Image 1 (spheres, rainbow, N blue to C red):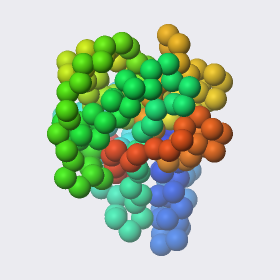
Image 2 (cartoon, rainbow, N blue to C red):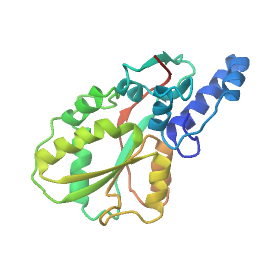
Image 3 (tube, one colour):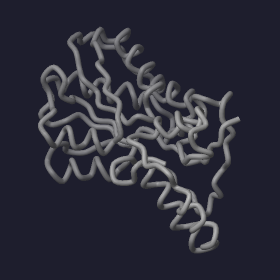
Image 4 (spheres, rainbow, N blue to C red):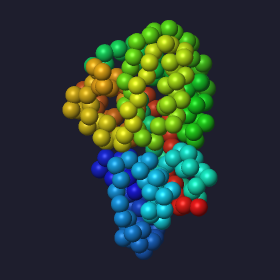
Amino acid sequence: MGNPEHVPAGKYAMKVLENLKKSNPELADKIMKNIVSKEANVRAVLDKVVSKEVDAGFVYRTDAYVEKDKVRVIKIPEEINVVPEYPIEVLKDSDDKEAGQEFVKFVLSKEGQEILAKYGFISPIENPQPYESKKIGGEIVVYAAASLTDAFKEIGKEFEKKTGCKVKLLFASSGSLRQRIEGGAVGGESGADVFASASLKHMNILKKEGFVDNYSIFAKNELVVITAK
């Protein structure tokens, strides 16, 4: 599982186990005793299951989709599962707020939501509107949760085509990205202009600390258990 201190998928897995303990404490304790690693991000959990270093792992259904030919998916009962929400926002000290805001608009648009859906994400937006192309040029840096890797790579390419604005992407656990932002990695050549998190917790911390004014929910996900085929 992911490290619950930094990795939202790990935090959600612990919440699932807490919920399970209420109805089946014996099974919950058995699973807890068999947790052998706490990874730096959810993709590392996926890799360990695919390589058969571990028997099973908690990942998002979107991660399982990436390796659907190599893993079996075990659905977690709805009554104990959680539905992670993904927030996105432009950093207040971004070097290019206009381009950052356009990127957020694209993610929330019909085109952005269709790309996310292609990778298994659930849209929280009813009737998203088409994106109105706008040539802006320049370059932005987007910090995004590891579970967004494939979807955001495609979104970045499509955004570049429509706007002429280059998108540099950095993927890691939401917690570690938040810590980079708190350490001053905002704007400049490698600092974030936009942050897309897999957890409301990390975005709310940044909001409280004054790094963002507000945020939009752009996707939802679902936790599953995977085993290697």
